[in-house]
Length: 114
Image (tube, rainbow, N blue to C red; front, side, top):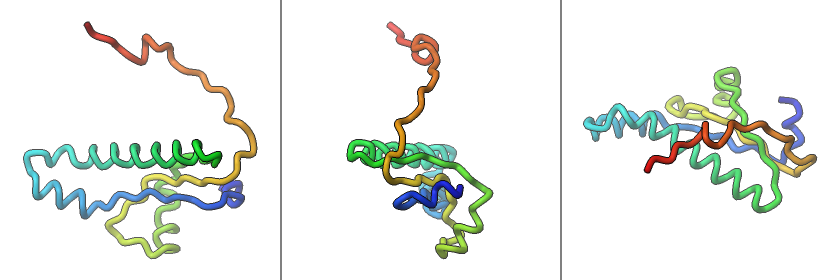
């Protein structure tokens, strides 16, 4: 965590659980889906922010120190109790290229059905 101090800043991603619960109440037919959809929205927001920064030469990493830092962050930034911290994205200069990564074979990751 100390290495993140060199970042220009950090984006904190939260889910407003009051909104999720209200949607569950208002649309009971889909109530079981809203928590999943909230997580999908988180992923979309995180990916879009990361791609935008990468396209502009800004480095970033996505971190999940939950629940270890939740209370500290909430206290430090006066976060409402109904906001749940989901991820942290420190961003700044690119000090080194990303390392290589192993991937599953494409045929194991995707299925094309005719």
